[in-house]
Image (tube, rainbow, N blue to C red; front, side, top):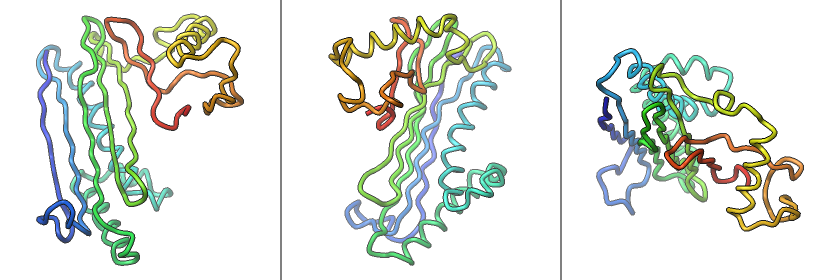
Length: 219
């Protein structure tokens, strides 16, 4: 099997053909896809479906941001319909508060983080700017079993939770230059009640298990 790339870039609104510094009131959506081909079609389809769902979930969360009660309804919409919903929201904000409006950008990207005989790790990243001080970025690491196409979770590979948590904290402290007796909350980390916890994301690499914290997840 191997991976191929594809992309969609769409623009909505006024001034989209102007230079970047003048491109006011424009929405730009860029999606950079990764598709698995070859090998067992059932497995590749399972992985591709999971990846596509992540791309779509980003659009759904933005399109239904102001209408959480119908979030599930938005999941039934096509990609083009979601684009139009987001464009309508952008236009409404532009008309309501023109001085705070401008270019909105939505960038989503998938790439391989590691390919092993038994595991494929993929990095899904999203960066969105919907007005405000700065863009929001978030990365999700996905690990797939090459024999089944199913997503691998912590519980699938960690047999002793307490021992693994202790080891992970030791590695975290070493990487951050913290002594064993230094309190995490006093050093500026956001762990609940100052108690170390695992990140939401990890990837399986040739070097071992890589733990990944997104911005603002713990610091």
